[in-house]
Amino acid sequence: MPELPEVETVVTGLRPHLSGRRIVQVS
Image (tube, rainbow, N blue to C red; front, side, top):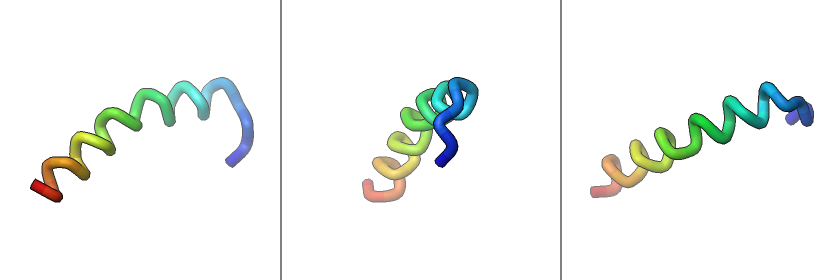
């Protein structure tokens, strides 16, 4: 993963959504 501010921001913004999807799938 290239350490770029834009990438970090996008990843940080998507993490909650990915975590939420995983929780929904597990449930």
